[in-house]
Image (tube, rainbow, N blue to C red; front, side):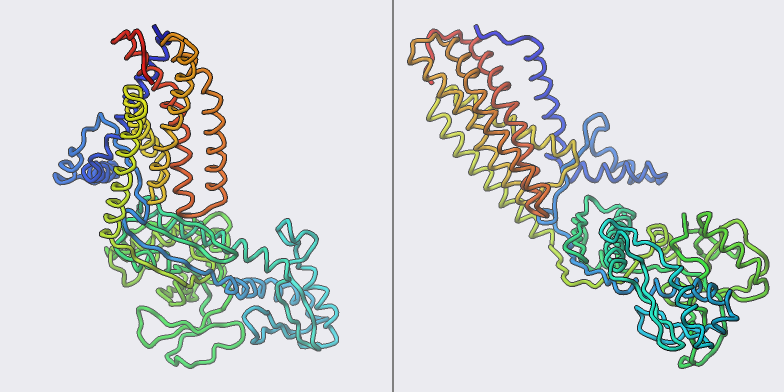
Length: 553
């Protein structure tokens, strides 16, 4: 009799039952997906007879976790975008201008009057009226420089300043540009992720590629254009002082100003101070709402810094117009009636309810720090995904049939037991994928097929050790025990090395390589469980039932 402690038998039984229950929802994928979506909508406060009916498509007492299907299995959109990091340089120069202007104005006796001149977007050109004060002006502006906030830029200043007679030219240093580029791409990556997450898309893949590119893969959407509509909108909100209102679209705004069209008033343009008082980056929340006339609007709230700047400006400019600018268009230019110290307000305009909701989503996610240029876009139809799934199934079925035939032909009853353990192994892999919410790709299916060969390889090692013990004259029970004990170290070594390779592929690789690595790593873990422990319990049960005097392996 093969002795296995009762707790080990119970643990194997519980693990097997749990794996079957966790993997079961994937057998009814469409039904469970509809039920999960309906329950999520009900949890958000929505209710209707249709939602209640959909929620009842799958019993609530059963697990409902599903394997997320990757882009190649479900269909969807693939986009590769390049972040135009140079756009940020111009924004930095615009934000520096008020600081430099005020610093130089404090020493007007030496440098004279200060004006901003036109120049390249990445440079700030400042002219002083007293050329003899250029040295003092250089000293003042250089005193505004700050250390570069990066490990590679330690000891460097963020700006460089040079003088050409009465003209000061300010630009970002090389170290600051490198640090800015890195921050810009990281910020764009996070904002793209938040925007896609806001609309509830399942398991998108959003990765940085190279120095300034972002890869976006979103399963389940109808076209790449849908994703571009979500992430391509800049939603850049600013609050800027109004200098003048005009109907001349070719009007010269003057140095330090910009000409911006009005959305609600065709043919009307506003000349605005280029330096914004506050921007969308100072927002902490934005929600769709309605104004006092019942028209769709968007309410907003600033962080403490933005609220302070907003309150100070509105308090000092009562009676003056103040433009709310969205994506370089004036959507509203109300006259300031009183100070607004609370840091909250409302954006009105010609919005539909859907547009106000979309705008609130974009503002909450934040403005993209720079424009995205889409270098590559592909839409993978669901039919192609279905073909990929069927091809993966066919490969898995063929592999399973070949493995079963080989194991039974080579090891008889013990081969059949190994095949039962293999089936439990595959169920455990699907259960693990469901439990962890991992994404299954076509290479992931290849990893599962490869696991089939690895799993029975463990049993082959065990059975060959059993044959050696039988040749030496060992009893059937002794042969089984020695086979498991002596083969364990070889099985462990083989699976540990495979797991290390899978880990390297996951952390170093991208996209499809990681999908393969995930299922391969899970297969290694489940193979150790089923190949050693489940197989041993099954053989012990067979021994207890048949009590053979001899065995043939």
